[in-house]
Image 1 (tube, rainbow, N blue to C red):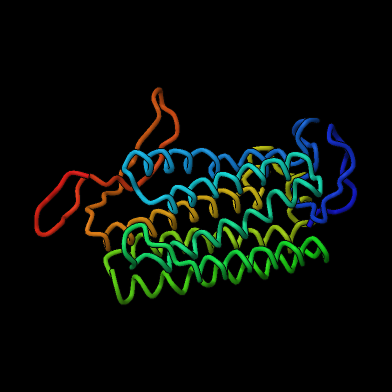
Image 2 (image 1 turned 120 degrees about the vertical axis):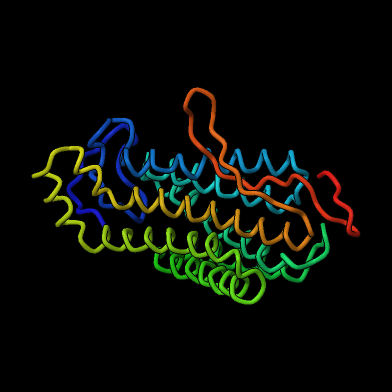
Length: 278
């Protein structure tokens, strides 16, 4: 975590229970942690395109919800790191729990009938979210949130390993790429926390461009955002294969050199041995 001696900016004193290693208001007076803020764009923009494509392809609403939930996490994290206010911290951390619950639901419902609803699993996940929210608002202990979030991620990892080992082995590349990118982000998150003082001293001695490269919490956002996006893609790919669709992973770029987004595009599916357009 960050040392206590940081400047004050537009948003006033820090009220969040966490203050990360990036120097506060070092880039602009209007953003507390500049790089930790703008790095959230990867969690905001690509999932919007994923949600739009899912709507166009008529895919199940749970996957639209997954994409939009990731966008909400990115927006909440943007607000948190921009202000370092406690209310904005909750807007970041609680959606992390809720979005993971949506991911868990999707992963455990991959092999069910189309548009089926598992009310028992929904009840368990909603109850879990309510309990975590209530306890976290009461104790205000970040470690509690991190443990609960870690449990959900671990559940997703186990389910993913089961799928690529026993059901669709040819999806190992996508599944393990998602996991590997996420774990690399987690490693950098820990380095940023443990060696914060050393990183800050190193930045003072290095050119700004090198200092930016050592903003490891920003890299955590980039890598976990990408890993989460690929996980949704993996879950969606698994689901559409089970429904006998023929999904394809495509890369689309915005006009005039905008960002490139990877998404699953469903062109056709098989029903009763006949190829139908989707």
